[in-house]
Length: 107
Image (cartoon, rainbow, N blue to C red; front, top):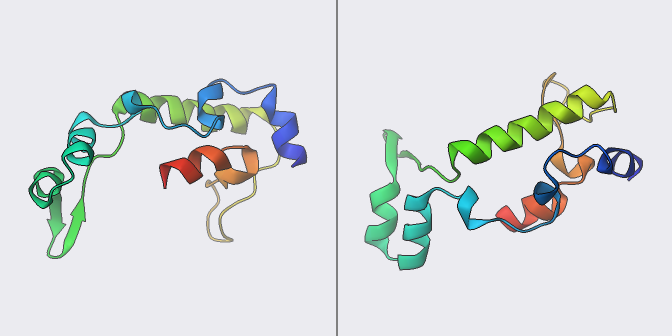
């Protein structure tokens, strides 16, 4: 909690810490599939990467840029970053910097 408190005043994009996913952050095709919520609507956005492995675009490029800007801003802060596991030298546990409400909502 100490890191969250210290970082709060340095945040670049406060919306990422509020726990609300804005529709403008989501890919329009994903939003359409969500609204229609039919098997065919979901199939339309799926891409088969390899046999049995599928992907879809969830967020916009603008959101990705904003999100990465926030993560890199945290790195620049000099505050300690907890890594997701011992084999990950660059990852960060987003909950530990105050993004838990946003990540919970996104899930």
